[in-house]
Figure 1 (cartoon, rainbow, N blue to C red):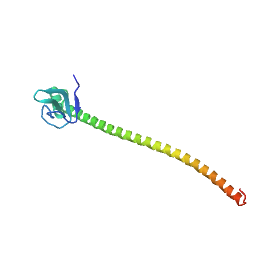
Figure 2: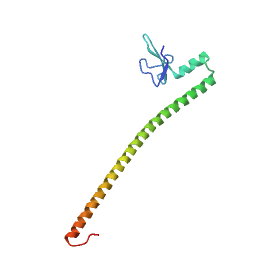
Figure 3: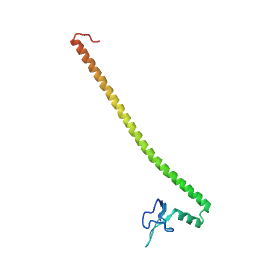
Figure 4: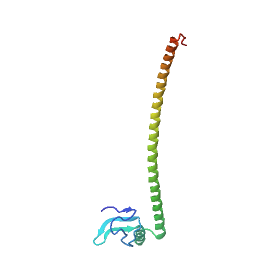
Length: 137
């Protein structure tokens, strides 16, 4: 038997809770279909009423548990969102580090070019001075 799962909204016909016919999610998926009816879903409100009827928790305690479950689900959504943001920031950081490494390589290359050009200018200056009879310093 497959475990029940909770989804945000019913997805298959009749797209409603089997008990109250409400279409508001989240709903429990039972992995069962009734001939002539369709997939069997149970909404959160009816699941609470069923739990209360079976005596799994009294009204006040059931409300506390339901509230705690909602808080946990909200935190899980927050954590998922923050994890996604963290992944994006890590990617951006790696891109920035790569750009920094590329810039360092460019600086080293251009410093080498400047040194080479300075040497050539010095040689050209010495040659020009020799042509006009000046002394190179």
